[in-house]
Image (cartoon, rainbow, N blue to C red; front, side, top):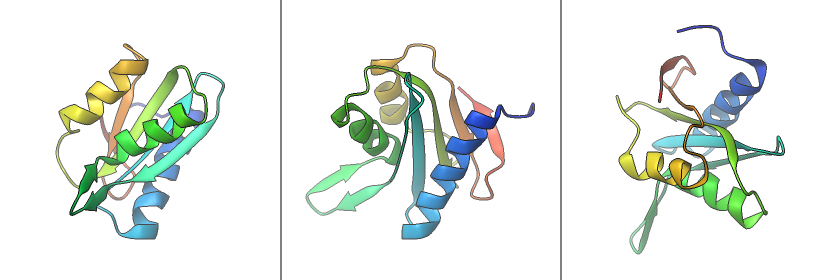
Length: 110
C-alpha cells in the first residue's frame, strides 16, 4: 500500500482506538468535507445492529455533515460490509474507504 496522507492516517488511528476501547468487532472513522472527524464502533444489541461505519456516518450526519472526504474501517474481516460501503456512497460517491487490519495496516482502499 502507498503511504497514507496524514489526514487519512488520523482516521485510521481514530477507528483503531475506538475499536480497542470497546473491544468491538469493528471501529470506524469518517472525515467530513469541513475536516471534522467522527469515530464509532459496531453496535450489536438484541434489538438494534449497526456497522461501525454506519454509526460514524450517523454521528457525522446528526452533527450537520453534508458530505464525506474519507472513511476508515478497522476490522479483522477481509472485506468491508456492503451496508457500510453504501452508507458512505450515500454521502460521497468517490470518497476513499480505507480497510485496515487490527494493527492499523491498510489492506485496501475502496
